[in-house]
Length: 146
Length: 135
Image (cartoon, rainbow over all chains, first blue to last red; front, side):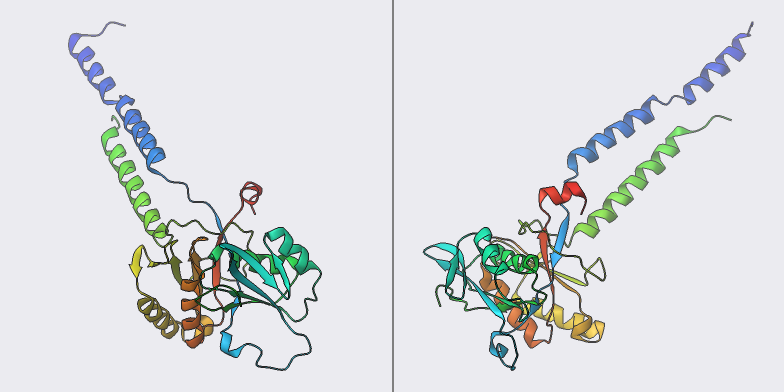
């Protein structure tokens, strides 16, 4: 096909307008930018411990006594105390909770200097052991042994 | 008629900026904390809590990325109670760093009881195996 010079010039101009390379470049750079700047946030879950103040603890008469876990600092390390027993790990606490009657519910009482993660762990262990009612009770803010 | 690519790129760019900005606003209430790694439990109810209170490892109360005093947090909870029409309707999510001393959680918990708020949600981070399983 023979084109006259003016027709050839118009065709070249049209081809230049349809150039996709700059758009792809920009989109590619944007994608890299967002990949680099985006931070992955880990998925979260939730626990629902009913809240109870210490002053109303044991206020009502009940057929079943609730179990009480104290989260305290013992010798510089956090530990769980339940009845006369002491658990230094979650595994030990789980073993104790599985052998306890669960009808009366479970109170988790955290001393002020104990880490929050340990109290949350006790609530989770109570749920996992089958306690239907798990209640968090604010403990002494000075912390330490009872 | 030839297609003008420049305007298309402009629109795409603006859309990306818009979505990036709005998604950042949604994430603002989630302060970066080292949450306790626990499975949690199935929550029946709304996915998005009404009020999110963060407690950092140093014990600072953080609401919407701003450090506030305990009195200010209580003020916010009180306002939420008034807005929702009672403490039973308030959906409070507490996100506490696992290393934070319980003294700060206890102080807030006592105030919540005084306000009549008997239940709240405690944020945890899903373990790695639960994340992979999609639970």
